[in-house]
Image 1 (tube, rainbow, N blue to C red):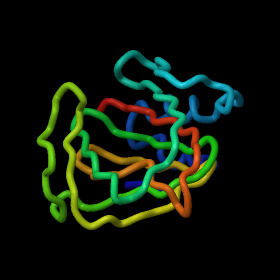
Image 2 (image 1 turned 90 degrees about the vertical axis):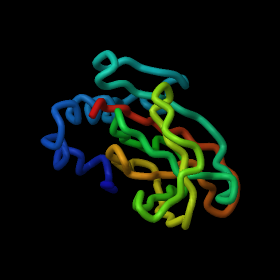
Image 3 (image 1 turned 45 degrees about the vertical axis):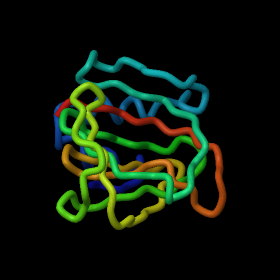
Length: 149
C-alpha cells in the first residue's frame, strides 16, 4: 500500500509502465465535472471508474482483495476512512471471483483517512476497505484507476 498526495505522484510513475497514464488522468482539471462511469485510458490495461456515493458505517463493510488489477483510489471531493490490513491476518468471507476480480475478507479493521487530493495505491493481494464514513454519512466523489498487474 502507498498513501500520498497527488502533488507527489511523480515518485511512483516508475513502479509500473501504466502509472504515468493513471496519474495524468488524475491531474485533469475537469475531475469534479466528470459524470460517474467508466473512462477508458488504455483499453483494459488502464481505466478509470468515477464514483459518487455515500460513505457507510464500518460494521457494514468488508475487505476486498484483487488479483488482476492494481487500484489507485483518489479522492476528488469529500473524505472517507479507508481500511487496510495484511492478507494473512484476515479470514475469507467470499472466495475469489474471477469475473469481478475480488475476494471478500473480514477481520480486524484498521483505518486511514483519505482526503481530497490524496490517493492510495493497493497492489494485488492487498486487502482494502473503501467507503467508510468518518463521523457521519457523507457523499464523496472518488476515482478508482484500475491498472492491469
